[in-house]
Image 1 (cartoon, rainbow, N blue to C red):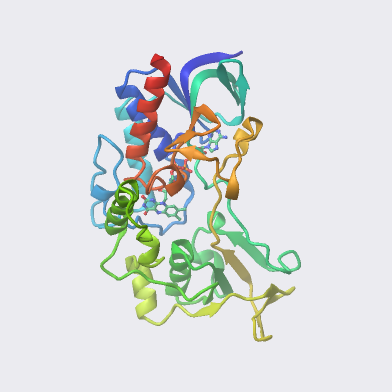
Image 2 (image 1 turned 90 degrees about the vertical axis):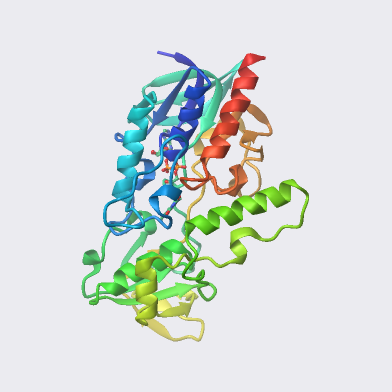
Length: 354
Ligand code: FAD
């Protein structure tokens, strides 16, 4: 059976909810289809010790401040899940959970979202599918021959799963630093942290608040025609959240330049020496989950869809939300997604009124 709504939002994580908040305010007819059976998007699946890199008040969606988590300056992922579940209820957002959209097609003057529960015809679609379901693994020689355990950030849960083992953590970003610290602080795990270039820690007093301010200032400067300051990338890569700082200061974060290949039982470093290891945790990032948009033929460089703001250049009925700076400055953060969500909803309201 085919159903209809003016706007179909695909994905009910923070981005889809922020879009819903603004669509609701504008009085539009919409539905949010979310593959997860429960509210919370990707936050339901992170490792146990993950904490936000900003305090609660700086991690809020439009309309509702995230309450502080008792005893924690930086809330944990469970607190974010509770906040998103409450947000969905509070604004009575029409989220249908457990519904996956396989593809979006053109269908005359409508877009058709092909969901596993049946198709939805829409005048506009917002794709807010996140990146968590598309972990990226680099092509390193020998990845297929290593007989130990290999997992990605998305599969890592807790140090107890590696008790007494040798583990190599790969990746010089925040996930790599936090997982290396999590394992190292356990005390009974031999952790090596392999990065392509030496890890660049942000100053200890810089957290997500500053990153958001810098990203916003950069956007404003670029919009005003000023030179690109490099934004947050010029400050460093890794937020020194408390566990990372603790592990670093205790001398527990042993970094090495990236290995050149895997062997059956470990890795080979650039100088030809080898190390045995039980497990490799690939903290090597994500790609936007956009396979469902393939029938629209919009794919541009680096797997992104060319956009103006959030609107797809070659398909003006489609908006992309929450994937990173290319869909709005800091849009892949809790605090940053509100503004592009508002702009997308306004743009759609204008389009529908024509
Ligand atoms: P998601 O949370 O991934 O939600 C997307 C939803 O869409 C999911 O429910 C998914 O199941 C659903 N979906 C996907 N495909 C389909 C489909 N085809 N059909 C239907 N539904 C679909 N941000 C911060 O602000 N502060 C932080 O401290 C912070 N820490 C982070 C730490 C890590 C390790 C990571 C990876 C990210 C972090 N982020 C942080 C960034 C960002 O806030 C999160 O990645 C956030 O989950 C992105 O929200 P989203 O709604 O865009 O995507």
